[in-house]
Image 1 (spheres, helix red, strand yellow):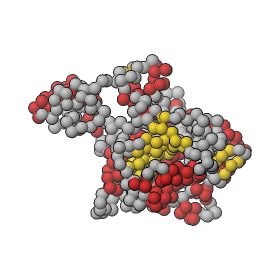
Image 2 (image 1 turned 30 degrees about the vertical axis):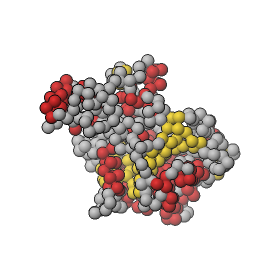
Image 3 (image 1 turned 135 degrees about the vertical axis):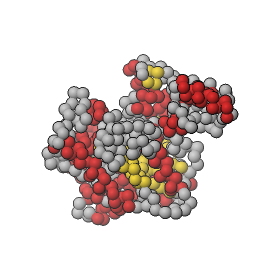
Image 4 (image 1 turned 60 degrees about the vertical axis):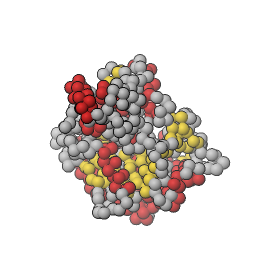
Length: 506
């Protein structure tokens, strides 16, 4: 028997069932709203939604509630867009009282900054020369580690028709003045409310990784941990930073006892996973031979495509920063061997997907927002957005939009031939999904299947933990429909298609 999640009718039915079956009592959930216990009961609809606190409170007389700020609670706003909303910004900008909200406990789920020692790792520096580092949050799940690469784009000449070293260096110098190029403004502790979705320590938000040890790598080298040069005072030392972090994890942090390590990241951080994943997996297995190392890149499978004028705009910009930073040598070794005269191809996983040996689950929208804007440079909105032109049906830009789906399917197909690999790709417009759609029931592939992002990741991880792989298995969850036929999620990002273009972390 199934009941709706929430609402007076559900409360009456829930109360009746709990009373009749002895599954709970008037106080059985006291103090447990933020944790899952056997004596707390909730129906399947609530569980799949990922937030049963209101129902537990109604049935069991549970914990303090999170006050509403307008239509939604502070928790709801932060889960919707963690890059835009925080407890502090909601209080400052809108006068919200977030004191009873789980996302707004500063200590809960926070991570501590560890700056690398300059004597031990003298080259592990951000663009401005300050020392790089990582954030550490100890988890209760013994032997399980989540290594997450922060996104934040790259620095390169804005003139993509003919980018120059001078233009690229000017952009990187500007970048060195902020948090994506310097550690000087990094906080000693990163507030737990900042970590949402797959990074949250809240069991309700994150039923998979909530109790894993988190190693969060803030991004400050401009090359997705790839550069290997100092140019005009700018430290392109991503390769040295990554080497230093890996040394620390083995020598200081006890990762040698790991049983499972997930390499993940968003956008430019996901590119780092695809570029460096095989090398990192090999290194980790040498120091932790019992560990399974897997890759979970979120929105990093960027394609080598021309824009709507036929110009290789963004690909040229990427070549410019890797030429300046001497970053090519850090890319996928197999790909570099395949293209010794064209190392730039190894920036794009379509050219080496078949060579990736680490078990990988690609998370990527079939209509990635960043690729629509930065690669294809579309200037229309496919579904009609306020104050923005609608793409003409049958027009050139709409054809490019629709073609992106088929190009993605073809590009990552070779990766899917390997046992245990997979993809989760909705036919929706978005960029990075593990922060705000981790357990979102509206985002399922295919629609209505129950295959949310978190559910698929859990199944994929469980396959790796099985004592015996009894048969080849692939985890292919890619919409077999075009936009906007996955009606659960198709219209939820149309406004950001316009409004967030300046804030993309590619």
